[in-house]
Length: 329
Ligand SMILES: NC(=O)c1ccc[n+]([C@@H]2O[C@H](COP(=O)([O-])OP(=O)(O)OC[C@H]3O[C@@H](n4cnc5c(N)ncnc54)[C@H](OP(=O)(O)O)[C@@H]3O)[C@@H](O)[C@H]2O)c1
View 1 (cartoon, helix red, strand yellow):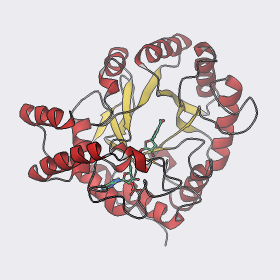
View 2 (tube, helix red, strand yellow):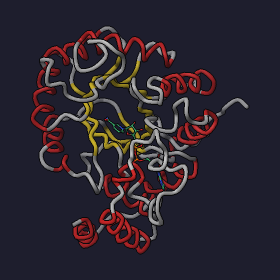
View 3 (tube, rainbow, N blue to C red):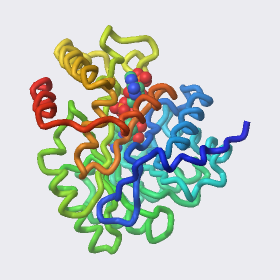
View 4 (spheres, protein in one colour):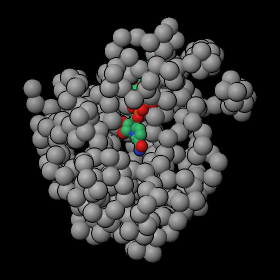
């Protein structure tokens, strides 16, 4: 059946300005790292994408290597775009990245201009797009001069292959330097994509300050620590979960007794607040105005809908924030 988006979708979402830029991003964005590869059920991904768009989620995040196999998430997304979103491209912010291993030989990994420029060409072909909205360098490459990597981003923006440039997984000092280089080149850095959740708070030790000072947005990935910050693993590792799947990035050995003890305590607190732990984990990130958007993953429409509800739920008191800090110790 052809897809007709919900006409009220923009009333259901909050949009935040990305740094000092002109662009607004939805408070919740959807990532296609898992659940959209060839190993996944195409129709399930399609339902998730449609539901997200119906809820005002305008931003969809990909990378060259998402799948598995690498590249297949972009191919699936391209099919979904062609089938459902053909006339809606101008209402969507689509991002992709290069920086991790993608193809054999010396040009399929890292931060060289050769890799970034050829990779984006391939990503565009896989998705059937003329341009992406945001193109990221996916991780710092110690063997490539930062100037070369930033020049490649600048060039791709000037060539019209990307509207904005972004960086991901850069520590605070390197982010600061990269943002400075991009500004000098005349292509301001739009956004930094960083791992941030109650379980992963490194960004609080400098990076968020750098981004605020520089007027760069922050999009927080793996807000649920890949599902750990939910009720998913409270009674063990369920079949079909990310930790149970051989292609999942969350490994059973990461689910330690100590982690699960914390999850139980956080879950209790969330329930007392009248929400699920997943919702509390998302709301907790959005309490900081430096976080432009929270970038979730979902393996079902039900998960997506539960996570969207986090946007309508109450704030934290100072006591509650203290309590969370104590529960995390
Ligand atoms: N830049 C980078 O280096 C980088 C790295 C990682 C991710 N990312 C981006 O960030 C996006 C999100 O990352 P992520 O998928 O790790 O995010 P996440 O939101 O922390 O984890 C998503 C997973 O948690 C489970 N889940 C989601 N909602 C749930 C709920 N309400 N109740 C119970 N379980 C729930 C699902 O796993 P099940 O499969 O078990 O159901 C889902 O696939 C990625 O798609 C990607 O776009 C970027």
